[in-house]
Length: 50
Image (tube, rainbow, N blue to C red; front, side, top):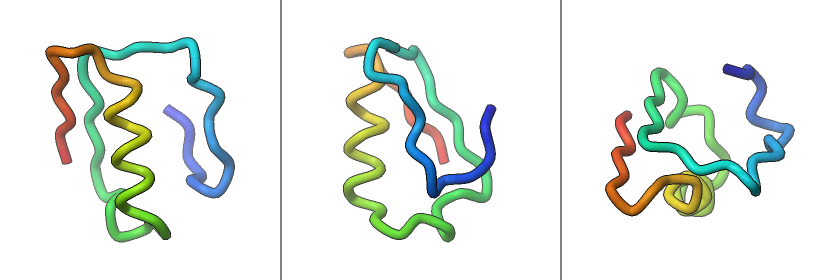
């Protein structure tokens, strides 16, 4: 876990089964681009939970 959404994380070589977010959406400046980036970090059997 890393707070602070203004600095992107270096996760290009990472793949996750699940991404769980809590109290994040209202703080995003570009929701569409951010969600697209999250989906790119997930395995094909992905789960993204808000």
